Length: 314
Image 1 (cartoon, rainbow, N blue to C red):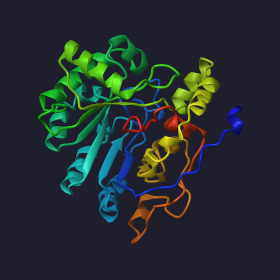
Image 2 (image 1 turned 90 degrees about the vertical axis):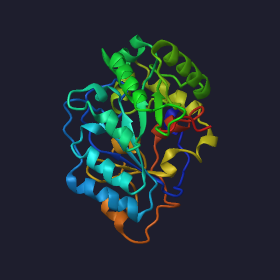
Image 3 (image 1 turned 30 degrees about the vertical axis):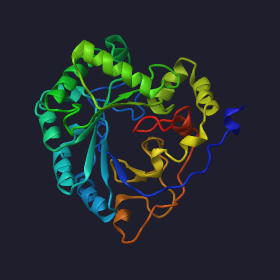
């Protein structure tokens, strides 16, 4: 099958329940698989004007979840202010945390803040072994991640008798599909508990998206075409009804709208009249049944058991 002749199926939106905002590209890490190309030298940050729009958009559209990503979203100076305001509206907030930010100078009270506001945490931990993590995310990242997890556990995150959600994220270190989520979760739970006395809520397995920094990496090692073909050959149509773009809207640091975070990084803005957060304040608008902008990278979400920001789809 020729890659150029394979097209992703047309899909449309369902009811919008999650607003995912990329609050800025600055990060204290520069991971090899990062599709955002985030890093310490990135300066793009969401303005106060856009930050102030977010609670209004949430209220106007009855959105149930604010999903905050980056970069390291906690590095934005208005991160805590936004979290407090949205939580006061009884709306769930998810922080996509890299864990090492919890040990950075100036962020010593971050874990306490997240716990007191009952923020859900989704944290990247691509392996329970030091060498594998440091290879993908940088030297010393694993030890800092373990320290961060211990901090979160000390506040009740990931504990069965608490309501503080701590989900971990696995992604493969090489150009292959992720393994079974349930089987790997059982291994993670056993290994992290026995090695470090760490608990967590769920493990999500994600496929690496062949765009930006990871695309360049695959190209360098001569695996880009092969990996794209792998994703297409393993397309599973059962996953089409559960892909996150059907119920999630992605917002970039300038306030422009995209059907997903990957489209955002590729510059694929939404078609139609609703293109910016400002447009979401217009009364009686609806995105239901709107077409979703698609491309060959979308096979990364439907291959095998599927992949989304919430892990497997089927």
